[in-house]
Length: 282
Image (tube, rainbow, N blue to C red; front, side, top):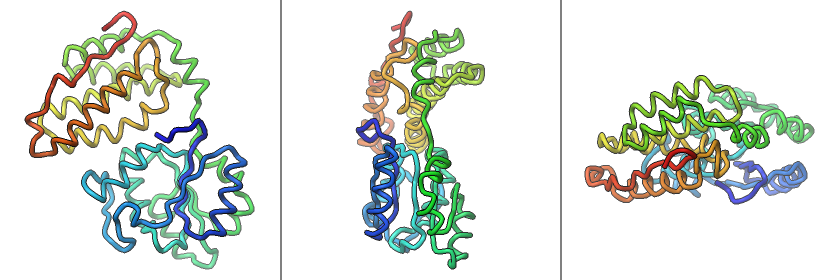
């Protein structure tokens, strides 16, 4: 995740005049801005194939990995930027469970109705004419940018663990990852607080570990990609769970898996599956 308390907006914009104007406005609104001007940053040609879905390997995977690690509040696409395969990228982002929650706002020439319609059809959350975008940028950003309820999450993290969650954590620590997933899913369904994603994050880590045990490399990598959106917004300690340690442990497992690769997953060192430390538990 980006190293700042300011929410991040990533702009797929190459026009210098646009980037300066957009950057100045977004900075005043309290956002950090990062520009991706050309798809070659990820080793992908603008006219090259990039099928929808979660990309796991090589250069195609770099784009998905980058966005899941950054967890931006909003993605901006200039539909006039020919160096970005926005039709393919928007479709990919909105078809992948790891990225489909990322809001996408596009702008383009009002006379290029084909591009505006294509962006909407690909799954963009908002598509507006360029003149509208620049005249109403603050309102549009407020409408589409994802807002993390940090205060609500912090308050909910002070609540105790549910009994279902404790049972799920105990099963996780016993290496019973399938059963842990089942209990934590029940805990997630019963919790309506701002911190309910705590349980979703842990159950997805449990599934990732289970996939490794079963030798399913792609399945494990997909779960690690997906879990970032739920785990990253949470504080280091939530409901007595040491999430800072859990994040570090899960990252160590993911890195070890990537180093081994698909063909060597059967040699994975299962001692890297560390228990979760929480109040009343390990």
